[in-house]
Image 1: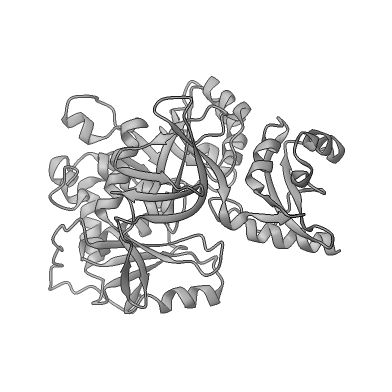
Image 2 (image 1 turned 180 degrees about the horizontal axis):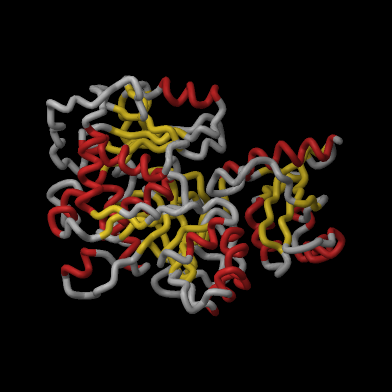
Length: 462
């Protein structure tokens, strides 16, 4: 399936053992990586699920995951930023599991680990949803879904590896920076694009100010718009040596000014739409300042229901939800109701998808349905605004009113923003504009609407 009859790292180690697999300060070839994976597998116990601590180094997480998969086990990378209560709830759903690292267990040097047969349709990864509406769900995918996701995306977004060299199409091997956490589906998607293509996975420090330096080592990266905004001035100073050519943006609205600036520096910007349940990206396009999210990628299938809700099907759709130690399958024929609201843009062919917002984010203001994302998109057109989030605050007369939280490139003028929003219907006009708070470190892929709503409500009370 997708060119593999064994585990992908075993495939590349057999084809090109001396080719670089991981690019970092301590680089690894495919042969060296496979040896490390075999050694880690010897430390695993009998439990069918391996829980990895997100605080481990990225290298340790990669080796640990591959070893667990090779042993026929499922993996869950547990986000240590989650509360103890949420972590306990998640772990209670798994059934029998073991932690990695397990320092109490020594490898059995007298027994060679037995590599599990390559079964691409067997549950392999367990990934938590964002949990924006309560306790996160544990979503199960097989290798098939991850490879289908990687294969479809790389048909549109060029990402070259040993697979392309073997077909004599190209001579270069690209490097994708592991810039996103592995407890998030977008981080896992980077891993599976690397494995699918036999490319290079770049592991460099990339928190805060280290991001710009990391990006000078790679050809591809997945970033949120704020990160790209911060690094562009630094990358401009090293245009002759910077190798960054493609950035996949997500997590927030993307301004055309930002992408135009990046394109002028030779960086192609991409954006799209996806979910945990769909193994990451479902639609994709070159970022162009328009509010659509592009066309459907290969191996995906979606429809927009009569009420505007997106229904997902296709080969990237998750196997199901892992609950009480067992898989509760998603009916592939019925599909997955996403809670996302969308419409088709038929002015172009093939049609593109435009996301209106989340059903869960809607609130009522004076009897009118307010979709915060519509107001956010309007505000995002202001050149001085990096990011905007609109949340409801309680109101005695109207039930709720929209309030806008603004992250700007400088000091913003609330009155000017209020004047700008007079183009919107009265019920969509924010009642106030607040500067973006410092609630927590940048641990996630996108800002927490729930946290910002709670914060805004407190400001309104105070």
